Image (cartoon, rainbow, N blue to C red; front, side, top):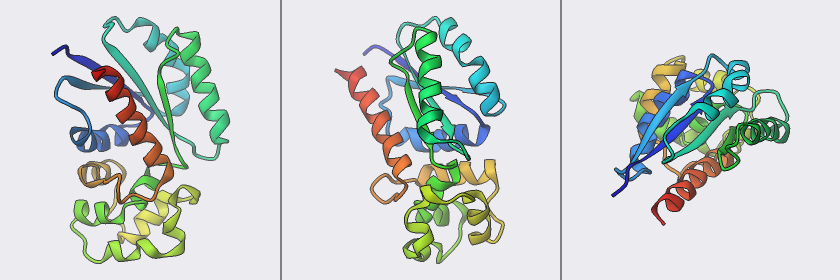
Length: 190
C-alpha cells in the first residue's frame, strides 16, 4: 500500500500535541501525519504559501488548523483559502477552531475528565454555557476555571487529545474538523 503524508500546518504547539492523541483513532497506518508548527496566526499566514509551494512529496495532503479568536470565521477561512490557492494548493483542507482550541475540549468534558484524571467534570456538559462551546469567547479561561486550574495549554491538550470523541463532542467546529479529515482519508483510499 502506498504511504501518504497528511501535513498539518498549525498555529501553535498545543494543536500538535492534541492531534498526536486524536489522529491514531482516525488515520490508517499508511497515512503518516506530519506537523509544521508556526509561532502564532501571524507567522502561519505570513509563511503558509512558501511552505505549501516548497513541499516536494507528491503523495501529500495538507490541513490547516487555526483558531478563530476574535476574527470573523468566514473571513479567516477565506484568507487562508486564498493563500493556499496562491501557493498552487487549492485542495488544502482549511479548518477553523471556533473560537479557540479549548472550545473543542469544552465540547467533550468527559475527555477532559479522563485526560486530567478529574471526576465529576462530565456532569457539567449539560450546563447551558457548555452546550455550544464554539460560542464561548473565553474557552481557555472557562476550561481553566472548571478544572480548577489543572488545565494548561500544552500538557492539557496532550492529556485530552486521546480521549476526544466525535460522537460525544458538542463543538460544531470539532465535528467539521474530524469530518474533513475523514473525507481526506477516504479520498486517499479511493
